[in-house]
Image (cartoon, rainbow, N blue to C red; front, side, top):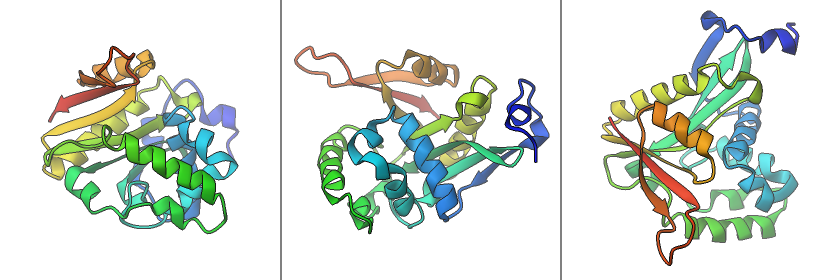
Length: 213
């Protein structure tokens, strides 16, 4: 087995990179959950607590929900998952099962309830807008593999999926404080569309970015 220092060397072998659909198993689910929380800058773990990865992974292995394996793409390097991206269309979101996290069978009910309340408020502003919009829900690459172009590969791949599904735009919401991420998305051709909140002169929390496909 290769040492981690060898796997994450500065020079990337293109033939060692695999982009694949996520598998409906807990192993993929736990890795997805970790990346998902990292992409949210720890938002999920701050509310759901120590069982965050288990809770998300439990939803991940199930169909027809926003955390489902059906919406996720994994990127591997030398057999190790080093990143993921997830997204869905407007029409897909309309059919998602509601409150899927509450089906988690191992406790944390109060934390999940708190998260669902907050999520209901945020869902009014985050997510796809319009039937021709594909929403990039989350994208993340491991720290060791950042700056090597893997994020751009994932963005290109999800853009192709969006086009295949008939979408005309690709959109996402990013923390307004995360200038590095905003600049990375701009390199992919995304433009700032709006901010939230946009009232009472409050500082923006989220920046909506959009790309025409």
